Length: 244
Image (cartoon, rainbow, N blue to C red; front, side):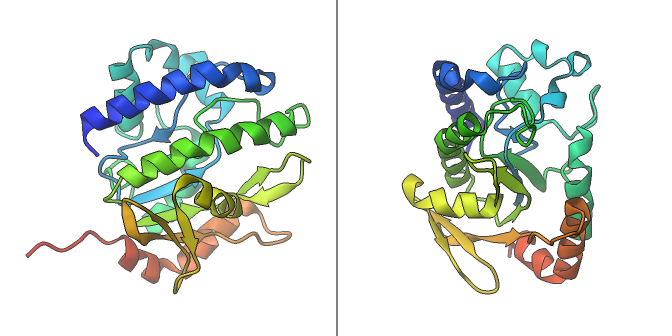
């Protein structure tokens, strides 16, 4: 994917979000759409989440200045590189996981992509309308699959955490992606040693490391523990291709 292609894709996404916001406005929080954080044009590894944190848009972080598409795009691509606003603390756990694989966001080897780009009230809060939230992510996941298909250099996906169902019960994010893949010209394959997500741009599939839910274990600790246990395999899968 080239920079110009990314710009065109972002312009279409911004228009799509604007047109469909009325359907999901019940949970809307101040902020702009953010489909990704970091250098997706070069990242070999993507961490996957649900949607941007509402606390990302504290006025002191100055997202309100990213009104023009070039500024918005640049802010997202350079999110983890040294600048006035440090990365949100939410990324600390994934950053530790990436360090175990000898990778980091700041170097452009990894980036983060959400299945919905919209800022909302916290998805698991009691005041969040779960029916509207679920309808939103089911609509928006199309953009996740579109972007992933165009990022042909990606070699590994890291997925963890829950996403709410319409009834408020939690579903694992990996299961949500698996269930919706066929609707978006993708296919989830069991694979060996881990599942793979196949798209037209990734006909051999991208390995997907799913950090499993562990009852009575802090989810952030479980993520780090699971990546640590599988670090040698994940390092091999995410390694840069050798050039002769």
